Image (cartoon, one colour):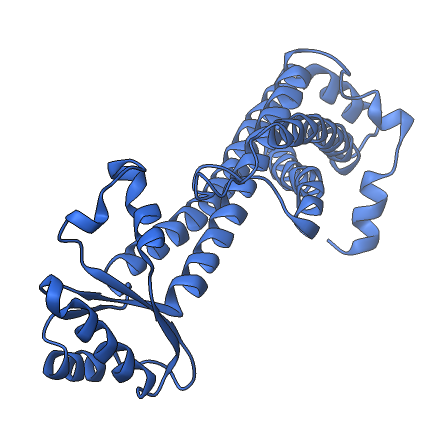
Length: 300
């Protein structure tokens, strides 16, 4: 089927449109299914895009940072911290390193122990924040040197818990795209059932049309047009409701880490839901075209 044939197929034809009843349960079913699937597709798309942003952000932010934890007696803590900073300043791939202040460490621990934590009376390790640069950090080599010169130092390059988080976010992104494919498949199945039911219910009308000279192509085109437009408008309504729901979602919050919030669209991503009605109409077109041609052969 070429482009010109496709255009002619979707052109309004008053005579052909009268072949398909404008109302009935098949019309309502097509509109409802298309609207519901369009609504769900918006949220599946929002989940996929948001998960992708989270995965990219975690991968970029955590990949360029590491931490050195120094566990040492109180009288040796300052000396070992200074030695560790000296080692880090001489290490290729370390752009900068600094020891966290008492206030910063209290801020890190306050979500678990409260803001009045007496850090100076507790054996809390000293943390050193590392920012990686070019040509990249040799974590294995740095661990060996720190182990030799700073006995109480432990290097954490975040890979142990960074990779599972990034993999989880990427899995959510894949789940979103799989959900969109399943939504498209379910839409095609339901519209196929509705088209078959409509063709079967109008079997007598189809027989009369054949007697007066109507070709199967003319009859199939009528059903394809009607169901394609129904699917398009149903999906459009569903997308509008879905976009409204996305707008009402809470925005990303730095206090919550942006993990369960910020599931909306950003930038040009707001234009992507506009493709859902078009894709829904394309799915309806293919499903109805296949069902109509197969059913008309059965009715021959």
